[in-house]
Image (cartoon, rainbow, N blue to C red; front, side, top):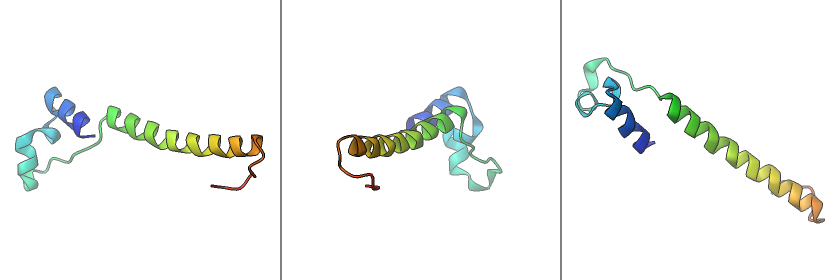
Length: 68
């Protein structure tokens, strides 16, 4: 996320420029970029896929069908 914030600063997004971070009362809100949202969704979904795969493997090899 820090690297994506640097990318937003390079793009000139005023919410991610160093000057706007120092001034809290500037009225500029920091909003997640499309890339940040995509990164977050991929991270969350991959955790879910790992759990589903582990349950499937345990059922396949006779390890029981319970949740880990």
